[in-house]
Image 1 (cartoon, rainbow, N blue to C red):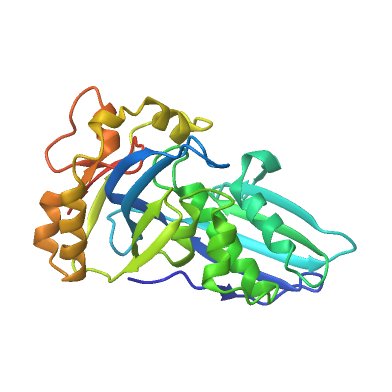
Image 2 (image 1 turned 120 degrees about the vertical axis):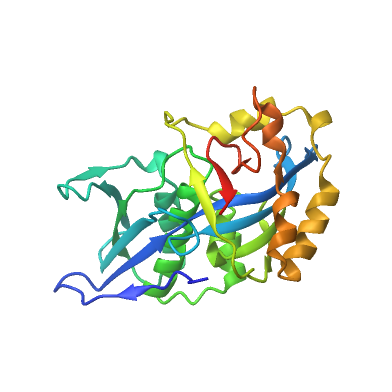
Length: 281
């Protein structure tokens, strides 16, 4: 699978660094809700195990990733501006800091910079919001990786994952992408070997973007109906490690499907809390 790479371009006279990164999405091949954390600062968080697959233009028909463009220049104080742009007319819309994971990612990375910087992040948004495909988490991870390179912070993969989990529990996965087992709240990542020949078709119904959509879906979960497919997850891990794509098909599952009023079509499965769903092509 092709990995995201930071592309360095020639800076203008006042911009010291300018990079453009592809920001992919994800689907969940398995998602087991195992319980709720009862102590500590994460009390109320749901404990899960999930197998996450990065989707790219190479493995998913018709998929178009987000594009993250980052400019940095030295300044007297740290400033961050995040915009979205529309390719058809190149217009930009500034996003308030509280509404964007990319802004928080930049804030975290500036703490490791040796100088002060003015950062501008422009997001060409193609992944639908509130879709269950992890677009915001992917954007944040792209910013962490991009600024780690641009500001020469030289943070390790483990350190960038530690920062990523301060943004969301999906963000650590996108630091390395590929395919991985995610445990605890989803932030403990164990990379898995790629499986040749896996291809997907992803469908996103028309949706209205919602604040805290995933949190609200977790609140609806009936734990008595969850955790019934742990054996399938174990078998799926074996199928992935032995690169057996035919064995993968019948093992896909997602506990959020227990919330659906009607079952999905045969061999279709939700990604995350939905509403996007996918099928192996």
